[in-house]
Amino acid sequence: MNFMTSKILFFFLFFTCISYSQSFTGEDILGAWIVETAEINPKIFLENKKETQEQIKSALIGSKFYFTKTDLVKMELNGELPEPFNNKMFNQVFYYRIKNNLIQIGHDKYSTDIMTIAVKSMPDGFILDFLGVTAEIKPIDSKFKLKFDKETEKSFEFIRPSKPLLFVNIPENEIYNYDQIQRPPVSYNCDDTLMLEEQKDCLADSFVMYVNRKFNTGLGKKLGVSGKFRIETEFIIDKDGDIINIKSKSPVEELSNEATRIINLMPRFKPALINDEAVNVSYQLPITFSIQD
Image (cartoon, rainbow, N blue to C red; front, side, top):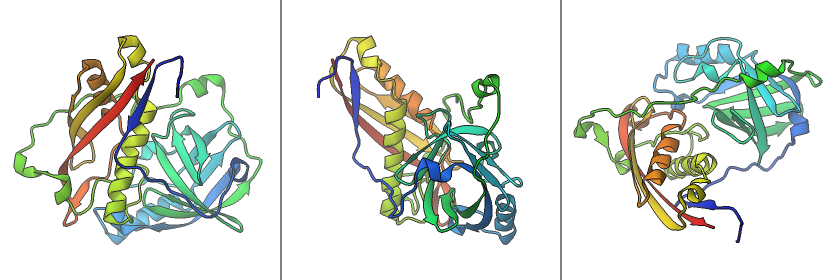
């Protein structure tokens, strides 16, 4: 393909997609919805205590989802969620888009940083699968509209607008290779109930989608370079699910720096597990791309 402007094409080894047999449209989801039932996947949480799961259910049942024609969504919790949930994901307005029976929620119309919700239709509502929860929602007001002024819209809060690079001294015997772990890190849009290889593919897919969205594609033109390049990146996803100790190497320093910046901005993961214990795991992500004039 030939384009007048520079472009960057990214190629990764893994790519998977999620699909469901039933489909829905943006018109179907408009309005206000209430969570009537919530089922928790106990494998998602390191702490499998009954009271923790009851706390999650209590916070979710009775919660409300509001979807507007202007691509805005608000998820209004009925209570406080325990770890590993990030309560900043709720009770504020974000953008959303619908693709392949997925509701993708982000900071702007082209971002899916916050969460991805898989949707299945049912006769009188929808079933939402997200963050280890299966929730049944029913409509309560199909004509509901979120109301706010332009200043409010400009001030939509980012969960993580910026994040300093973290370099932590971890003993070598506390860092595991990717092939040693029993469950890989789980990203914001993956399901912990998948088989091991499917989880690994979904993790790789998360990196694909995130880097493709966030990489500054104007760098090629700005730097005056063209051709194929490869960035070797290596980092640790630690016990808390944060990416730390990022190293990037390529023939062009600015491209290495951009890769480091993007990887560092990824939302927190659920950490890798060995014997149900969170561990630090090293991860290598080669990025091969071409810059064409």
